Image 1 (cartoon, rainbow, N blue to C red):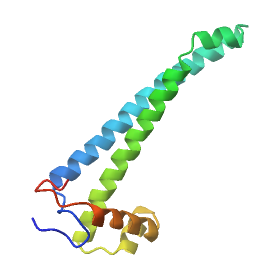
Image 2: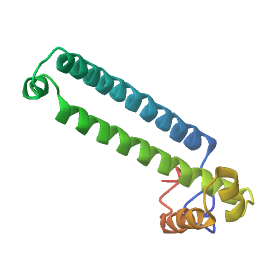
Image 3: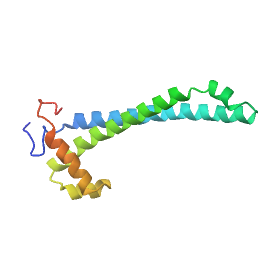
Image 4: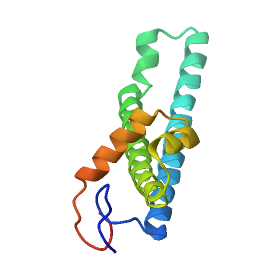
Length: 131
């Protein structure tokens, strides 16, 4: 595959599918982590309603661990979404779409699409896998 005008090598369908699957997995993991956090919050409410002091309730609540897990899950989603968008915007450009058309189709500004395109231009051509 040849190098594209906007950087890197064209993404294959398999790479796009893999990126979509990573985003789905990241969403599922985040949902699992948030549901666990919700359970912690509900238990905290029950303890407080039963008259427990906040200091006692916090002793049984892994708030720091939950916060860290949630932040990590959100980062994974953001990275997976970003990687997928790069692949898809590159493919859209390869298929002849203009930046404004991509933005309109995805509900994002043309300027934001242009930032992705600039990032694609900085992506080195490192081989056949498009990475």
